[in-house]
Image (cartoon, rainbow, N blue to C red; front, top):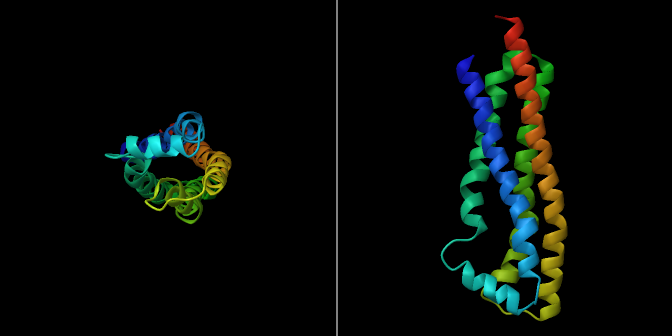
Length: 162
């Protein structure tokens, strides 16, 4: 039981880190990027010369997905409800990454890539990025809630089996 509990807590922690970074991007980075386009995007490019948000997400998003898969495997014997919630968390974590590759990376390339674009193209990329990041954050938030409900159900079940 202790290993299963550790797996669930690890998934919650990793998914929570991804959620926190998404919220930070929404509240801090995106408003700065869009404050005075194109100069604000150029300043962000210069600031991101060594590391950027992708540096964080390239490690933590896959780690959160692996942990979510581990939760699904570890809690499989504990009933259909827990399996469904664990599977939902995994699917949502993968969905958030799929959104990143399909939607956000192309806009990141427009905003932060080496090619120059007209200011209206940059503004549209930033505006779309900013709006859709709320959706991606909501997806990750629901994944965290699913993992928390898995933990709660797991703890209730564990306490009755003592």
